[in-house]
Length: 345
Ligand code: SAM
Image 1 (cartoon, helix red, strand yellow):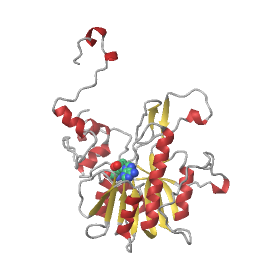
Image 2 (cartoon, rainbow, N blue to C red):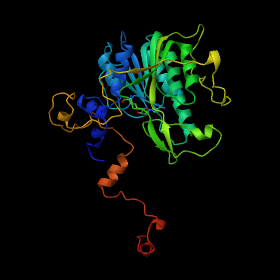
Image 3 (tube, protein in one colour):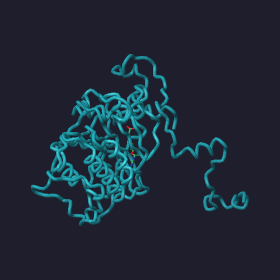
Image 4 (tube, rainbow, N blue to C red):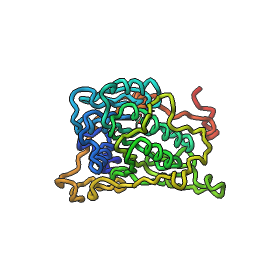
């Protein structure tokens, strides 16, 4: 892939680099704030699943806190430092990480908890869905420990099988729960069964399997991400946050969460971001003169990423490649018979 091919495909990726954001996700939080005034009166915030750090950048620039620690950023991966942001490297589903975060807010709770977490996708749809729900609930569990009354919680969700149950659980703790879709967040993509396809950062179980059989379509729609925006933290009277009790127990009967009748919660769905904002599913030309709404009409110049990943998983492969030691494994069955004998031992 050429250096500019992602620039060609994704206007928000390009704009993120031009505006100094570490990731295009920054626009999602900015557009959510535009719609819901998330940052109003906020001085202390937690950014869960924060790497590479564009949401933390937005938070540290937009909220009124002072000094290190008014934003606490947590991720499995290491993150390059940011002014005013205290970093914790750890797994938010682990008790030890949760305790470390909670400790920081003891006596001085947070106004806002955000979570943009997405687990690595395995391609096993039930497992992926389970992992995503667990991540959101781990974030909610931490939020119940650190949020001040009236505080706000924003978390990435995929509108899959468990979403009604998740909305119901969120409604237990917040007076307002909405589902929001920023303009910078991509819409559904087309996926292909088999091979653990993952497009657009989301996934879906095989719909034909839910219908109890029938022929499986070779293509399927992957639901795109959305964000649960929960305002007005107001836990039930007598509620005592408890880290040892998971909020969602998946040992229930699979049909348990088909909440019906008065128990079914339908939350409002809001698209946000200025209507004139770029459409994340469209490609815009690089030559800005061909797109008059793109600023000054000057010629396109490649902008390098604001913060290259600090220890990406592909680092070892890059080092091996530089030394000329990265080669595809040659298996005898891939070779024409005449070359098998000549393979180096
Ligand atoms: N909001 C970030 C930004 O603006 O730069 C982007 C977040 S990225 C989409 C998702 C992140 O979730 C990844 O960095 C990943 O390491 C993190 N993550 C996934 N599972 C996690 C877990 N169990 N604990 C902590 N972080 C996790």
